[in-house]
Amino acid sequence: MSKDLRIILSGGGTGGHIYPAIAIADEVKRRYPDAKIKFVGAQDKMEMEKVPQAGYEIEGLWISGLQRKLTLKNLMFPFKLLNSISKSRKIIKDFQPNVAIGTGGFASGPLLHVANKKDIPTLLQEQNSFPGITNKILAKRANVICAAYDEVKRFFPREKVKKTGNPVRQDLLDIDTKRIEAQKFFNLDSDKKTVLVLGGSLGARRVNQLIAQYADRLKKENIQLIWQCGKLYYEDYKTYTEGTVQVHQFLNKMDLAYAAADVIISRAGAGSVSELCIVGKPVIFIPSPNVAEDHQTKNAMAVTKNDAAITIGENELDEKFENAFFDLLNNESQQKELGENIKKMALPNATADIVDEIEKLIIRKA
Image (cartoon, rainbow, N blue to C red; front, top):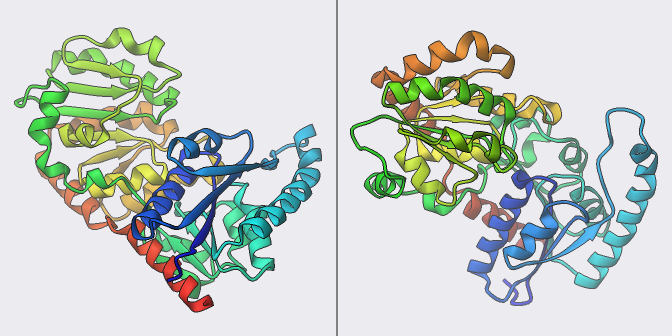
């Protein structure tokens, strides 16, 4: 492989697109310390902050998605698209990448479109079981599509799809050895059951409302609760911290939070689902209904259909949650079965496998 390796990555809008791209870049750097890596994102989205924090250079495009109704933003879309294609041409001409990688989100559309026109090999990484519109469009010209779920073969050319899984943090691979450390870190009683609730970095309003309903009962029943309520809701729920309940804005030590848990309640973003498969604990998914194509429900159901998790929609919580949750908490054989089944779905070598595919593309082109 040439020492002058140049790789361009594009994806963003949400952490689910950004963090896999950063994980791929980190693995490339681990193998090829001299590689030049550039990111391209949407100029007003979170990647413009998160990518530099991870130590990489990024350029922003003036691009955003189409709204579902007629708005001024939609009228601007053609102009934004043409501007972004023009800027992508300049970026690619100046940077001369060996390969272009898209991890989803609108910014990857113009960049990979230009890369395809210039005959630069392209690789897509699709995190969800139901692909977004950008990856659906780009798939026709992409060389390889690295996927986390078999279900995406319905939407993409099957011969291009490689099932690699989603890149995840490497500190999750040995959480089974961290139980005692985790209990000390969170000041937990090893004789009591622990429930971990994850609502994402910003938080999940309906999940927080639900947990607030049961907080007093959990205290009475001596069940320990690590409740990550998110940045937007911390002021509303921090007063619930008392006795066996602890409320956190966010969790810096996710590996220890997972290690401490007996049962986990979580949203079903692609990254979370991939992590939870590796963690191998019993999970109740409450998918967010406020995402494109309802992909969180599809992600959760891809696990649940293998008897590897419980999925409850937000519109079913009042009717189903209480029985499902407390039955699971008191049924160790069900906990064991769900934990073992979800672990079978884990793809812990995803990042390395994706970079293997990138190497093959570069060698083939050379």
